Length: 424
Image (cartoon, rainbow, N blue to C red):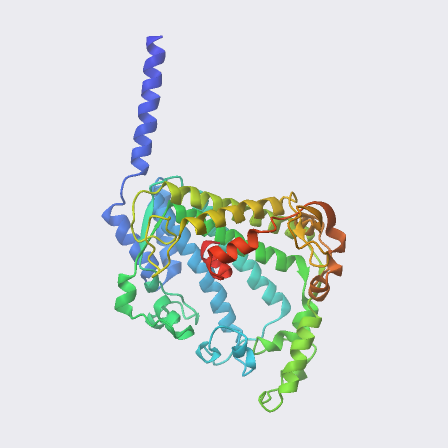
């Protein structure tokens, strides 16, 4: 009995010492390593340095968090540099009237490469793979006390593909190029530090899974017809059977030509399912998005500090000016997450807009969203808007909460999508 007790005490002490070891603050070497990796000229070199260090120090969740964040930034860097290489949004069309950015600020490649449908799919797959790598790294973090202060505006993205991110490619500079409301300086960016913590690990994993769901859903469908007929709207040199569509026109004088392009665009938003297994993966990623959202709030609610928070609790302050999370906002979003989870499980049916049931009834005919992923059919945007495309998925059962949308509108002051984009 005495020997058994000794073993129990020894194991307990080992577990306690391990827990304390994992919660140790980062060393000066780790702080310098992470700073150089995230704000240096090359995220690629930064990722290599962090990976090498982590191989010799596998218990450092501080470095692991930095590696996951670096991999996430690298995934975006690769996507943006690819779009730049293929002359994305370089044409003088009226897209700037439809997008929340000034297209004159989009970097112009002096000699954009020709893009094909297969190259576009390869770029999407590469984005998916790189985001998956970041998510895998983040998923291995176990230290609830991990904290990673990052001057996010100083992170550099090599958009022009010359092998290094210069000062003009730092996030603070890119932020200035694409909007005019806020104009941070490099000095201000150095002082704007987000102290990412354990809750933000879940937040970032949620975003990774959301991106992966989008990529899987896109690659599950055959979009070649859309590319062949409309890719010239977005890319400088698409390789298609209709080269004459790429002729340069002054769209202010020949506006009707652009109108016909957009009519064709919506007309061709009809995609046959090519790889149904990808839709199952997309469904799984969306389920993980919801799980990470719930996990994030569990960690946020447990926090007792108030240190440069990204997503704050109801008693904390965010680094984002005037971003106050009230108890009503927090509670309403958690209710939404629970409802979304039931919808993805097929236990709540999405209310069908062609049925006269916009009242307080909880039972009726609705769309089983889970089956949209598990039993995918041809996606037709126009028929979904009309309602006919929903026919295979209509069922009788319990409907979504009829008052939830109104409650969300009131809690978020009519800015549900803006807050949702932040919370994921």
